[in-house]
Amino acid sequence: MHWSISGQEVYRRAVEHMTASSLRVLHAAGDTVADVDRFVAHQANQRILDRVAEQIGVPAQRCIGNVATVGNTGAASIPLALGDACRAEQLQAGHRLLATSFGGGLTWGSAMMTWPHVDVVATEQ
Image 1 (cartoon, rainbow, N blue to C red):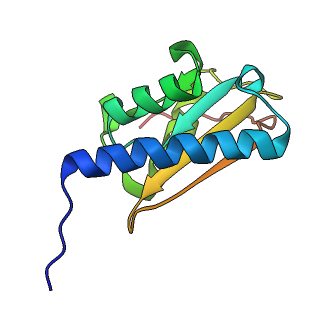
Image 2 (cartoon, rainbow, N blue to C red; image 1 turned 135 degrees about the horizontal axis):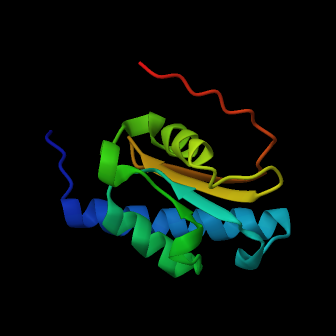
């Protein structure tokens, strides 16, 4: 048996599940979108990121992303985006961060966290 899924269907499911999961975790944490200082999602493509943020109600200036510069880096996309944002000083200790992902096997999940104090050490190569 051969299974396939269209790009449009993946887009639709990603937006639907990432949005619903994000809203559920906000509710479970007792938070609202106003409590979200930064939003980061799996960096699959910019259209998905923009649509999920729009549906949740997170303004673009509070979104963290690097898909335009690194592409879809799979499971590493959220940690890499957070690392880039930390180096760019877009994250500060105490920021409330909403993260959401959609990936292989059509799985998804979200988490609400408080960003810790992080000392950034930069090296040049």
